[in-house]
Length: 403
Ligand code: HEM
Image: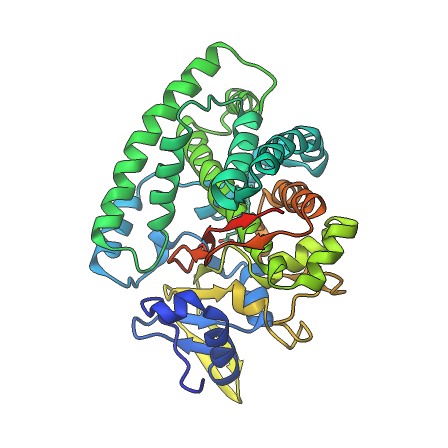
């Protein structure tokens, strides 16, 4: 591929992004799209940008560009709304991150191991009897959903609706989202918020030892977390908990099935942290994120200097950084013993580094590790299908026979 382009409207790009990333990184590592967005594909540029205090995560507030009129309208509407931690800059980000980090320590997550194993075993026992499993519906979705529901002590009767809402909201994160999809997402938020509000109100009256109660108490202990901030955080947790981990379980399972030598290692030893990092690097669920420079910034490439103005949308391609041969030897090979796999960018970097990384890794360790340990002779039935999305990339259906 010679002519580099970053065009999420191209179905071929959405389906197979990695060759496009390679072309961009080689020929135009600082690439400007027809909408004026700057796309970074080198590991060092992505890493430096995400760690820099010269950039904001608040796109609605600072971006001077939009791909479509619908998106521009939406940005204006959202400018005044309460933002989730993900879209805030310091000092608000620092304050919220301090409150919520207490609930997400690795040791707090490790206490969930037994429960996750029990959930996975129940799913796999039933699959064993049937001799087959549809990986996404049977395992990848229900386990993380139940885990986040347990953590927050949320009712699960409306799991199907929650799943639908979170998928609709996730669709709106794509730069290709249509007017209709954006409207559907607003409608889903309008249903989700009252539902969560009623749960928060109920919990205020009956505090327990769950994460939602801790967050409410943290809110009530002072002027720290407002009700709107708590709501925005819950919506983010539900989307993060549903969409990303589901995709990591799906993408990792498919990657291993396509690399039988590596799958055999999982069968023998399970998954360790290094191997999970390699699966995150190889085909991570979050392919890119964006930042907005607050002051003029510069990048160097092929002897040229690129001056970027404040307000420009700078897209950091996490997927491209993860396949940069400058850091990762033979980047398109899956090597579970890769010595530097922990340097992947799948959880981003800097102040917004994924808060749920320990939980996500634990869920994959137990779900995918147990699957391959129990069923060494799995086979793909039919053709796996992918969600037609780029920002959040994931397998949609993966039917397996277990014999
Ligand atoms: C494989 C699974 C996951 C992946 C690949 C992932 C990826 C990411 C990435 C890339 C970011 C940073 C985005 C940016 O800088 O713009 C992020 C932030 C975040 N993630 Fe995750 N995530 C995963 C699972 C989870 C889970 C399970 C939770 C919680 C239950 C979670 C909660 C969050 C939160 C709260 C933030 C915002 C942190 C902040 O702004 O300070 N994530 N995640």
